Image: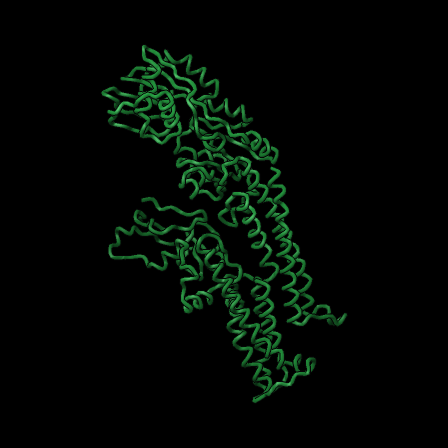
Length: 592
């Protein structure tokens, strides 16, 4: 069994049977050591940067009795129980390990996002309702609102009792995120927020212990409340809001984008490899020519090929069977020793005759002379048709020509890809002449022909080795390795489940123009992300120094923490509205 990795390089569960002992560089999360990746990145559970480490990989067959912890396997495989099935205790425990900036891609990521949304909502309302009496007991309530509430103990101690649960429960996500950020030797918005609320709370506690009536409890509580009301802050919202709108817009147009990194990555594509059958063509070839030689008849050619191909799932096999049905020719019933020769053809024993069906290369490998069909085969290839040569008992009997209709929008799509500066290549198992004829018709300069199914991945890697960011578009089982190898794998919706599962993007309509729509949507989303980051950064660069009191000595201008937090919420709204404006790109998608 081969141990595979997912699209982000995280080791999948149940793939450890054949691993031998070795020292290997891996990347793990300081907070969730069960998360293991083969390359740098961020933890899918908490968003922290993964740390490089050395680990000894041991063949589990040599360690009988050892069993991998089930919970760890669930984490490694990015699985978790749905939030709706978790108990209150489980949700609370999970909430205490959430941090700002967590990645929400993948199934577990989306479940975690739902849980985080619920947790933040609960913490906000908890903080909000306690903030009301905190304001009323604070100098703001007493001096400006002229509200006098009963004070069984001093006001400072009442504010301490009310603010402490807000600080430690509602504010915990900022405190814990800061702890993790400092462990990783990084600074982020969580650190800024945590410094503000901690300074206000701790200083107030000290004043209370010293017997002073002054305090800043309301500043700590309101800062926590307002920041929770904003889903973090403008910087935190800049990317996810644009991504959410972008993926939603794609789904509306039958373009399914599996995660945020994919949506961003599509905008950087430099080369695109298109599988011919099913991607550029309809994938439903029709028999156009039947040529019989050496005394054989057309019906005999069709029935022999049909009998041998009956167990094959190849589109050409289906084309032959359809032609047999159309001509009302019965298939021989006695078929033995069927063998599929991947990328070349099939062989079988049909009614005691040795049948071989396939390519020119297969016939040459078996030392079968093609002299009698050479001229007709060349003609069919020059016409851009796919050929199937039949040999019976070691002697060529005929050749069939089949044509797969090119999709209506294929030529237009390729022209527009070139206008975007993309290098376009076509890959196929077809004969070189057939492939070049189709490539010429579609105006594709780079054609990879006579490629065996297992070799498609190598051609994608070849382009990557040239320093290009490569996308692969395909629909078949034999396209899956190439889709996985590519920087961006794009599956045609009418394709196989394996291809769809492997790809990063699924085009449900099987329209080549949807490739352009995905690229245009990605570019627009990335542009909107940059705009959001710009506005959020400008806001923070201007507001933070003012809140810190830089302008106070000269101009007596300052921002109280609660006012700064309110402005932060407003900036978040601006960023969210700007992201929603991404919907205006829909007109461009329709116009493609």
